[in-house]
Image (tube, rainbow, N blue to C red; front, side, top):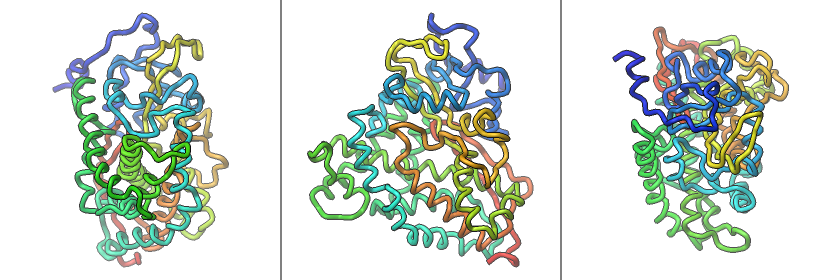
Length: 419
């Protein structure tokens, strides 16, 4: 089947009367054009082909797409105009999403976010460093003498998950089914918005059914694991309602199982292709630690959305209440108006600008853990495997969605020089 035939088969929403035809572009967030050449490369093309800063696509149910860093950051930062009531696309699927507090706007959102921060603040995360470091070393050490691995399958898909499951005091044996739920929520299958909504709804209900008995068992006890801390915390001085606890713990699972997993693989592909970048941090611990933020700037993986809260004119474009706006975070970090020479990974870049962790009241609560996991991965990997590359003929397979993914990341190294 030709690409044209595939494109013509996609379901298109009718253009609403308030959307000028000049702003319409075919942008499919779940099958972005050119993704076979790289996820970030595919999104970046929208900034070089004359696409307006706000474009409207008839695909994925019909929605706006913000294509410039300044716009993405502004929308994330202003919940009064751009609501988190629906954050996943297509909108039909986003309306099935029930996780807490990502679907809340301030002030309702605020006490839940404060509670999340009690378990994920920098002081709490620093206490975990030895445990996180041991988890990384335990995975890398057996690979060293082998001289090769599939980084995505053998490390990235395992390491952050092991860390999170330990924090939550959950068994690793549960990960396979939870990983399916995570994939179905962030990259739902289906040919129509309704089919995608059904996939996401089933996955969301799967998470809820999994956490429900765990929450009931840990309520009222003095456990110190992340789930116990959350479900025994207070919201406005009162116990958290059970349905909200289910939504919050499900959110933690989703974040722990899918986001850092994929970020690490994208970053490692780049480093494997640019040994000079590895050489810069191999013997410079300070540069490595300071440079981790540049990795997050360069390799964002999230593309979620906001809903227009009220009829308004924004940047000269008429928006209607209920319109959806997709915010591809890749397009903030890679915008040359925000970061000079954005393709280049510059360990010395001062104040890299990005929305990798979103912005405003919904700035990612797990960002401190993500930074620790990225830092420890670089340190422990380079300490044991100082030089590595992609295997000849390597062909990573990229997937776009609410959270981008990549698989097939074969790395090789000289085992004689490793260790």
